Image 1 (cartoon, rainbow, N blue to C red):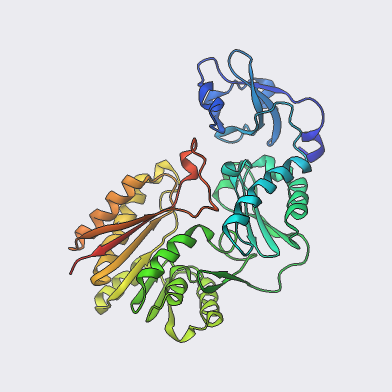
Image 2 (cartoon, rainbow, N blue to C red):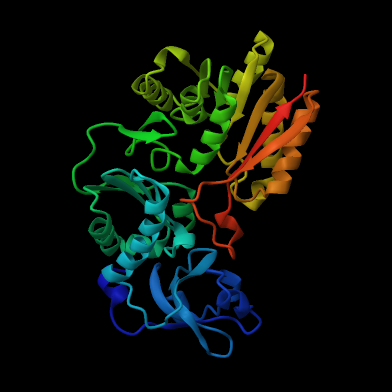
Length: 405
């Protein structure tokens, strides 16, 4: 369905089943699951991303939604006003509100600008890197209305370049194909330098993971850096330098970054050099579990060890396997921490709640023969707001242990 077709004319009506719980929608829950909606022939005929007025079982309007019958999340709330016009002005109002919040937090334009449902743009992620913005349209409606979204983004922020990152698991669940490229302005000449926590990170906005850099860990990087002064630091699943560069900026004696990606580690090295501490930074490419085992066999010890793996449990079917993987990370990492040192364990899995992650991590530490305290629990930074009604918007957990001798 084209942008013009979506925005034109009166919208069709879709209706909750009589026994579906409309109260959650009225109280701010933004999703309708496939088994909650009446899927008659007309609804089945709606193109992915079509707009519709959602009614409850008593035919009372609840708001304007976008519909995708190919997705388990069959409808997403866009606006509580059923008559809302989803045009460039509508997008601009949402982006202006998001920008006002980030502008209070950061004195430089490097942050997550739009965090999907929590910023009123379901399935849409926008990360800002100075004059460049990377957009992830992870829902069918955003793919269909990408042009007015991008026009509003440029109008509100003044960015010179917009990159579409149409990759990842979420798009597949919406029936969308992968596509990455510049859709507005000139392509960046190379990796973009990103100042953060006293270090400079190099972000590959075209070929890197996700949008090129993970802003969500910024505050957790800063906390770990407070523990790093004078210490040898090991950063596992480091990506482009992650915790390691922040630790060096915080006064670490040295930092070893471990990652499987042959593309990410050179960027980490460039960031270390640009930050002025390249001589204290080393890298080791390889499977994280194998490297952890090898370091243990070598008798290596560090004052601070951080493990920030990818999502081992991106959805509930992977929960048990994911928890076992987190436990294994803790079991292999804990012996590498010197007496009185610190271990930071992270999870970005939506399906793993904080208690389950804490339990798995503690089991791993215990199985390694170590004991300790949890001294800090971190979450995503404030540029990744949480929608209170949507548990999935609170995904990142970072546990800091202080281990005994």
